[in-house]
Length: 77
Image (cartoon, rainbow, N blue to C red):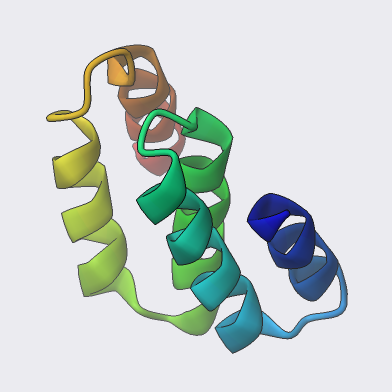
């Protein structure tokens, strides 16, 4: 449910609502890599680069997300 709200909000450029929705999705399912990716996208669009960087750092601590981190790292470089 929260991912869907986040995606609709992102599509409609309602970035603060999208951020909230993806944060809720992550709090309910910390292993959902899509939510992390979408939240990072939203943080970037909001210009919240420090939070985006923190999120990427935290992602490395979540088991199973190392592949996601490597893809984000390639995009940033």
